[in-house]
Image (cartoon, rainbow, N blue to C red; front, side, top):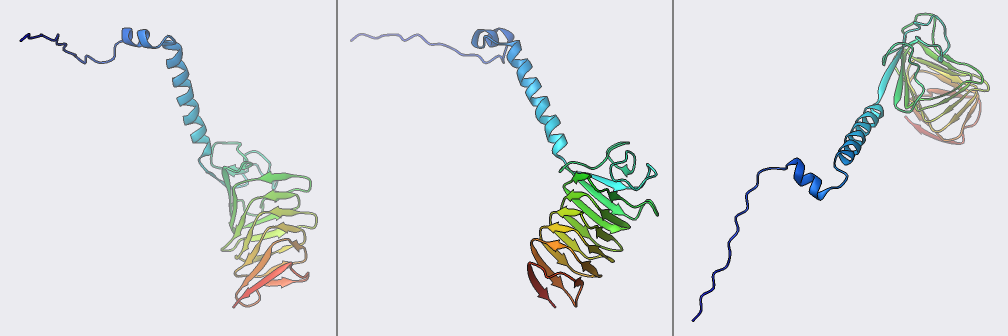
Length: 203
């Protein structure tokens, strides 16, 4: 009977050393740099995706939506004009309330009017919610591209709403076009001088 002795090996884990990385990865420092830059880019992009609220305060002393310093939040001179931003109109600014002028086009993630008023003579691409003492007025030739929930103190549409209109309180006069469904909640919250495309009444 023959006995054989097998060699034994002992493995020690001493952590990752610079030499072991170089032996297994030829790119070494370049790979590390790419990883760091990619991680930084993801953090920056993630930060930009976070929604920002911008509140009208007429600090630029005009009624023009696009005037720098008319909005507070996100730093001086920042106008809400991206889908990552929500425009808040609360009545700040006194007599100087925001107007999107004829020929102007604005896109935001949401527009909330809880006080004061918004006049749209150009194009606003955004869902719009009117509540409290807020008023929305869409001029002839003006357009809102997005759903409109009209509560608040009322308002008017002489232009176009490309989306659904839900009227929950107050009084909204519709002389314009609503391409989506018009839903009326409560007793006659909308005075329609033009027949809506589709009408639902909830009393």
